[in-house]
Image 1 (cartoon, rainbow, N blue to C red):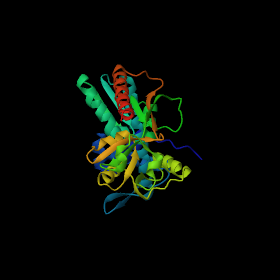
Image 2: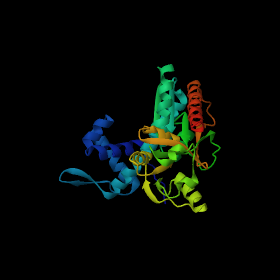
Image 3: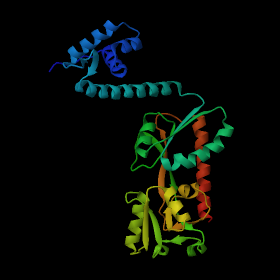
Image 4: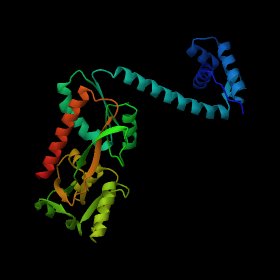
Length: 305
């Protein structure tokens, strides 16, 4: 089967006609005459071997094949834009800028708090903070679309450098709960209590379920929620207790909620990621140092409760 050779101008003409709906609109975008666009479309149809447009009541109507082809054109076009942006950032390194990609647990609350301390000493820095799932954060770091990434990783990847951090879990209790008198809530304390849990696929939930089953401990009742905010709200209303990370536990205020360390450890590990072949800028190094201090204070607070 012969190879297809498509020119860039043919594809551009097709894309503009699909988006404008008319040859005249596409010609205006391309700064050319309408006959030129028409000729490019005919050449494209000849080269690919199927019809792209049909005339209906004097207007061009895309065929089903054209719509399918357009979806692929847009996908490739978007990929090329990413390549151009990546090349520009690698070339320019956007002096005075810092781009951070983070998983929601850190990107929604903790890193904004770190930035609140960071920005006053770097008032001219251009800072970008984006929140993605951990898999996407890894991709952002590998392709150098960000300077720093924060993610939970299932395994090591030799394309990035990583620094490991840990968040020990806390127990959130309704104010006035009988367990409030204890310095540390233990697994055995959950027996007969109403427990607010995350969904079954959540890593913290799976670890807690394993321990409860191992020790044959049965809570009296369970609520199941998707978000830490939901768990804290239910605790505040006195509907149960919850085991969750310290960032989420403290993010939504302490009114009506008492926090205690939980034993055994159900900590969650995450990693600070940087591109292996790109040394961190001075700005990134200073942010990393401040992040370590904030994390250290969070850990110290948990140990001293």
